[in-house]
Length: 85
Image (cartoon, rainbow, N blue to C red; front, side):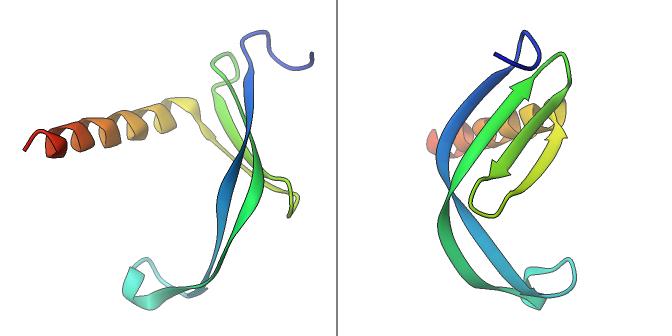
């Protein structure tokens, strides 16, 4: 209806995670809360962006579609390699 002609969207359920602590290392952070949340996901090659929107918290994040595709591809590659071992 609106947006880029190559745009796609989906509605799903995700998990909201809240952390406590600072730093880059997991030892310095810990999960203090997790709960399910309604999520909207939109993507378009023409804009080069994937956006994920937490409908309950009215909070979103956008990432480059090429970077997301690369990390998903790598996760699939590693997962398939480990599966075949």
